[in-house]
Image 1 (cartoon, rainbow, N blue to C red):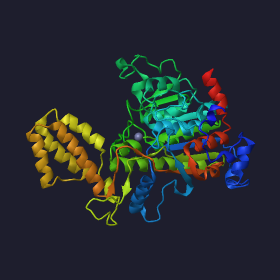
Image 2 (image 1 turned 90 degrees about the vertical axis):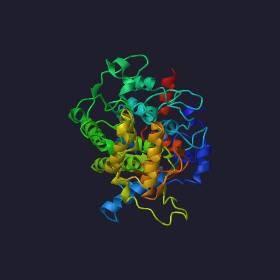
Image 3 (image 1 turned 60 degrees about the horizontal axis):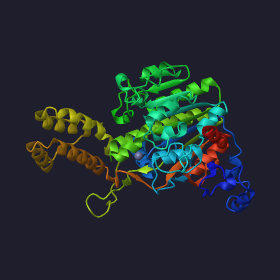
Image 4 (image 1 turned 180 degrees about the vertical axis):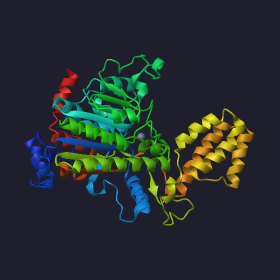
Length: 479
Ligand SMILES: [Zn+2]
């Protein structure tokens, strides 16, 4: 059996081309000929826009919609709401709970694999991706992420390494694929320490690659030629709530810029856009950063949907790799369940991520006598909180014992709780969860994604719609 049909537990074989007749007959009962899903598989879009909102489960869509309804009225929807086709099961082969590397590899290759794998099958052998096949077919390709561009999700489309931490290898591989547009954070993996990076081999991998390097929002908006490498931050790009608008473009700005350039080039194209930091805010149980990044993603999807509706040959596909944080809307804070209390309106009364607060805190503790003033001032100005009597008692205890690390950790927990409590939401974990994630699609081929799909089936359907010969790509990689 060829490698791209490893782990043949799909419920969708009946929809896909090049499968055994027997299997087609077996599944014909479940998926009769002539259904909308079957017909949609025959469609061939000339452009594919694939959004992956990292660590974004059903509750995140709801809290964002509810927030917007509070702002704009009860009929308000998210930009993707009307495009919902179904949901995705995200498990990895070695764990019911996936990581981003495994799930993104399933989307990129149609092969479910182990946690940590970047473009590798469970036997740790490289497998071709839809992006590589698109390049072979003469399409233009693009990757965008608000995380490091070498991070798991964009890496899974553009590199092959057994472990996601091998980001130096990922950076080098990404620049050798013929990708027209690469935009995100992660500058440090493209340069050695003497140029402000952290490559162990001290190599500048951008030099001689042919890429036009841009580092700021203005540089990007002025850039017109391919291939372009936009690295706007040494590590991940800023959370939307912390973003300096002159330095870093928003995810919507990167999306619009890329779509305009791809449109102008006139070739068919594949673009994957990751809203990468919704996940990080979930890990940090930071509802402020989480919601603000989700709303920024909603803006990016709206921009892409407007672009897609100006043509009739663009497939817009959007899902998540997994849920993060176990977010609950209507959390139990005072006993007696939620008490039917939940209101997202106060969340964006805060104007800072907890990560940014912690970064500032580490600067303040260089002069311990300023800590108390800086903490109380910043909690009030950036988060809208005044400390109560018992909070002040505990802070003074930490300060009296010079336990500044302890105070920092205590303040982070305080912020996690207070920002969640005033909206009556609750986090249940600082990690990923196994819950299904929603899937959205519009345009030619969209109906092929109808139903409750396994993540590898999303990759298989996508490769069929793109005429992407993943087996041929896999053979090339193993030559
Ligand atoms: Zn994560």
